[in-house]
Length: 444
Image (spheres, rainbow, N blue to C red):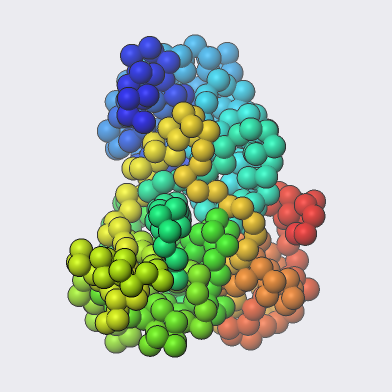
């Protein structure tokens, strides 16, 4: 890959990249793309161009090459130079000659629209927006394939990294029992509100505001919603499912993983194989676990070969006492900073770093409290709902609403605490692109 990127650089034909959304993830990705041989950050599209410019400057991109323009006529000349065009107009980006678009807005409805339009414009799409991916990703991927366009999850974010481990295991003849990630989680976090997010992350309120961190997004990291979304993305890529609705979220160190995340018949907690799961870096009393996988991803593998099991154990890989199950892991994820891998793979090889094949699972909404009739739901990371991963059939059979369709929806019936929100209990805003796309597609 690096040789082919060097060739593009030397021939002055770099991969031209457009970025939609320049927040936390977007600015990290932009900074890395800017520094990657054989790529050019050509256009950044954001509804707040000044904020985008500030974030790009903070990410180390020189102010003098950032060109804020609302004029279509200036786009073509500027992106063929070493400048970075900043615009609030999506159509300018779609009509430009960029090769790959990175969608990193984090909003499911907006991401669904941007992703659809990017594919229609014949641009390879790197979908950072996992919220949109779990809602309409299989649909977008089908459309992309029919147009010979790559739809890909972003390398560096957990779903694509888990997919890489999963792909490695199956491609080398192992069986995967469990795949997942680590996070900071306690059961009481399910009821967390955005106002609590900064303290749980060790920030002061002023630091949170100064760093322009989104309280709802960070709250979704804590209340389990983001973990459910990321594992749903993995499920839709691999066909894996949660062992139980909502997953177990057990506290575990790296060495605990091959002891706990294995079948009950062998001393673990799982009732089936081939499942997605999330482990916590906190014991249930809130104390930190030594040698946890706070930022990493993992898979638990096995083989029917006793010889190979012994070989794995001899190489120092953590296993259960019998040596039947072993854990493979990556201790970190460089969110945003590894996006160039996805860009290069899409452009150079016409391949994704993971893409959803089927709607295997959904992330559905559950109430955080008693909610009265006519109350407006807040969606991911809000005060009144959180997301839970369930199998698609379970969602259909129980008429459950995806968390991605809940934001600004009106509750038409009062519901109790910890209640699964159902379609006949809410009124979704009439103009919702993601909902319309799902409704217009067979089996949704």
